[in-house]
Amino acid sequence: MEYVWLRLRLTPAWTLGGRRAESRRGPREGVGAGEQASRRGAPGTDVASGRWPSRPPSCSAGYSDTPSAASIGPFRQSLKTSFFTYQAEFMGSTPAAGANLRAALSYCVQQVHNYDYHHYLCLLHLPPSMRKAAFAFRALNVETAKAMDVVSDPKTGLMRLLWWKDVIDKIFANKLVEHPVAQVLSSVVSERKISKHWLKRSVEARINDANQDDYAIPETVSELERYAEDTQSTILYMTLQAGGIQSTIADHAASHIGKASGLLLLLKALPHHVSKQGRIPYIPASIAEDCGLLTREGGRSEVRMGDELPDAVFKVASVADAHLEKARELASSVPTEAIPVLLPGVPAQVLMDSLRSREFNVFDSRLARGVHGISPLWYQIKLNWHAWQKKY
Image (cartoon, rainbow, N blue to C red; front, side):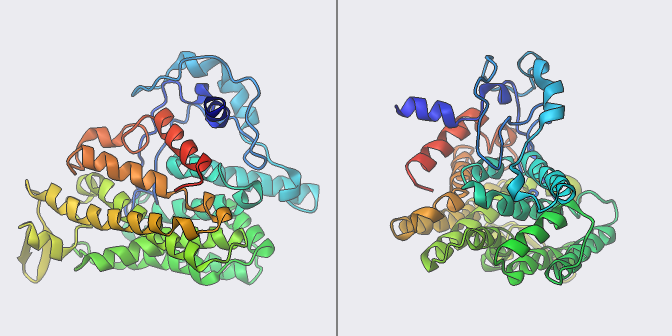
């Protein structure tokens, strides 16, 4: 029976055949958590209703570094015309409004699928009534996380972030904004009681980070934890709100999981920052100094490359691991309906385990393979097992 359940819940094998979910990191945090799935294929599921294809094509579910044309080719054309369908009752009161909102939600889902794949799979375990809100929050995170990475001039990226801050004000003022993510967020805000404070806090954290001096680094790990909470925990807080789940214990667990996830994603994204900026931005000065990696010159602090870098990564990862442990200690008191919202604890633990197995060498190329260093199939088995056991 357990085997049958897992087989039914797993994404059909043809979506995994030869697919590599490659990381596409944004400048601040790995696009919010980002795993870039191959754009050759997309899960054939009705996200709103949670239905899977009744007869997935038969092919290899193996894992490799390059896409397999044989496993996907026959279905690429049909995917172009049938990528994600949604139940009409979630979309609007008129056919025109419903069509526009369907297109906007499709955009949100695709953004999360393409840039935040490990969380995309987590969201499929949410009740259908919560998914529209959850995908909107994650899509906003994608948009703000990559704002600084898709432009050559940092000032342009900062202007984009400020624009998103203004968008949130307009949404809560019931003003129309012509952007798919904004349209879905507006729909969610009109239907659910969502905190404007959490939405703005998530964007303002990105703005504050973008406003820092090019060579600024956090002084303590507490500053890094605050940034992780502002950008990751807030998403979980709002998802709990969207589901009408009022639980202080669940909020505490969400705080710990978000902090752990944010810290670990920052560590995983270090190679991206080094290649793009030529520096290491997210190792706290206090930890770098303890590891002998901190240099001070002209009133400027900088973390240098060195053999001790894995030691510094270990110290930051240990803080994240402690947050995961605290979240698990709360599990017995967390309401059952909140468990699916807290499933991001699973990918955080997977990344922690991958870092440990690579001896905290973030430049080990194996960390960029699959989903956080493991095959997509094995990741889904882990995720489905935790969801079935009502664990995170």
